[in-house]
Image 1 (cartoon, helix red, strand yellow):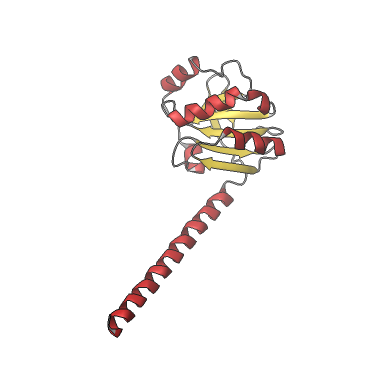
Image 2 (cartoon, one colour):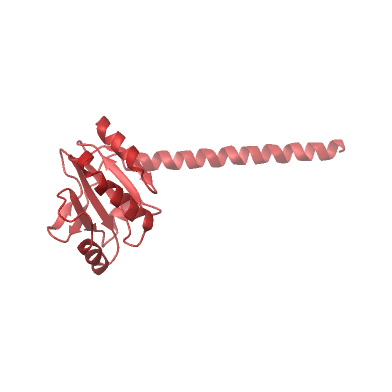
Length: 171
């Protein structure tokens, strides 16, 4: 390689390096801003089929909001894992939130394994209030808040049950 070619290659490598660092910084910055925006439970009211309008936050309990879809295999697996370990979550309220049709949610709830479990509630996000605030890019997406309404953890995607149990035990 001649001097001119080496210089061109070094300049291109420098540009690529700067671009990669810039993209990393932008991604980190967006994640930080997102996490900051969801630190406290928002004042959102969603529809519960049995109780009517229901505020999202229940003071004095750990609240777990699971944005799900009734046809999502990972969502159904996560819900089944929680139900199978429900004894570990006595002080946790689970809110299954979807923007699906009322019919789809009613059909799902009729056949659900969590019928009769007090701390499970299905909520409809009809006007996309929850979706617009939390911006879950995929289902399932799980957001967990402590008894004071402060974010403990969140996961975009499947939340493994062992991590959920461990986090609840620590609080």
